[in-house]
Every structure is written in structure tokens, then in C-alpha cells.
Image (cartoon, rainbow, N blue to C red; front, side, top):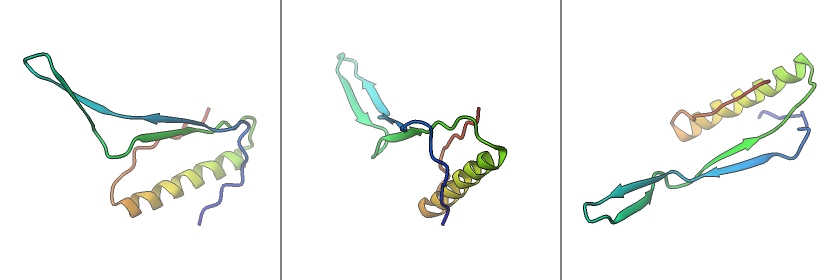
Length: 84
């Protein structure tokens, strides 16, 4: 089991994205429905002034968790890891 020992500099930010499909009919009526059963959730953690070892630890944790989730769900997750 992967453990993330790094503590973020700030509280995490969470964004919930509902993807909605809109169908317009000839009489002007719109039908809206969810594209997915559950919303897409995005979290942002900020880490500043970290050593190379700490950055590598964060990257390896992220990639390990992504690989486990891909196996459990049986599909590839769309994930983004941005190191600045």
C-alpha cells in the first residue's frame, strides 16, 4: 500500500464537474441528461519548495495509486499530475 508522507502547503481544493448532454428538438424544447452516473471530481494539492526526493516520492505515490485504480476499475483513468 502506498503512503503519501508529504504534507501539502495549503488545504486541498476540490472541483466537482457534472458533464451534461443537451439535446435540442425542432419545437425548441431541450432535454438535459447526465453524461456519466457520477460527477468527475478533481483535487488540487499544492507543494512548494520540495527537494527532489520529496517530488519523486509524490510522483511515485500518484502513479502507484493510479495503477491500482486502473486495475480495480478495469479501465484507464484520465489523470493529470502537474509538477511546477
